[in-house]
Amino acid sequence: MLPLLALAFRPAAHAQLLTTLASANINYSSTTLLDQLADMPEFVVPLSSAAQPAVTEDEVADLEEGDDTEADIFISSAMANAPEPVNLGGNGSLTLTRQDTGEKITARYRGKDGSYDAGELKRIDHIMRCSLTGVEVPIAVKLVELLDAVEDKLGRRGLTLLSGYRTLKLNRRLPGAAEHSLHMMGWAADIKVPGYSSTKVKNLGRRLGAGGVGYYPNKGFTHLDVGKSRYWVVKRAPRRYRRPRRVKAPPARSAARKAEPKKTVRKKAAPPRTASKTSTKKKS
View (tube, rainbow, N blue to C red):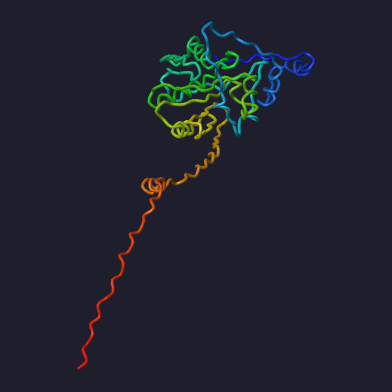
């Protein structure tokens, strides 16, 4: 079942749009859609009573260069359709661990007959919720299939989730985050694979060809999404570090000698000179 995004608009600001939506089918670019979603009120889902550690996503404040700002999203009866799910070679089971809370699940979301388990997909929606507000949305099943394929082809040790779904409120707080990030659609995830470098993860993501791949070698994570196929690299210039000059200490012996007071050496007085005997020759 495809995830649905309900659109809520202000009557005054969007009267024309609501009138247009009465027609059967409309095409909007994702830019237009997300601009309309910006006016939606923030609904905060209360978190569990258990204390949650402070959450920051500065590590994954990524620039989705070339993001899907012009990709067409088909809207029918005021609903947006996610990409069609595709089996990319995963075994139908996905293990995710949230980096911020340590939560871990193993969801067997697809049966042997190829059918999807709505309850297991709901567990994935929950663990990939917005870290700021706790809001959950249906994660694109194609993204779940992509993450499953990456996990299975890289050791089946599970994936570490740094960032999944983001509300507009969270996305605006992240410095450098793409204005129309696919994280806000539930179509993107930033991950790490234990035991594997981000280079291997991005190479696999590019081979699978299911969408966008963002490579962040300096941060050690990889962005994967199910938008249009594209690839980008974000590197930060290394900080220059100047080593303080070390003052060479004098050798230990010479320092000790300098520390000792100089001894005045008195020269011994020379012995008095005695008159030399001169031999006199007798005159013959």
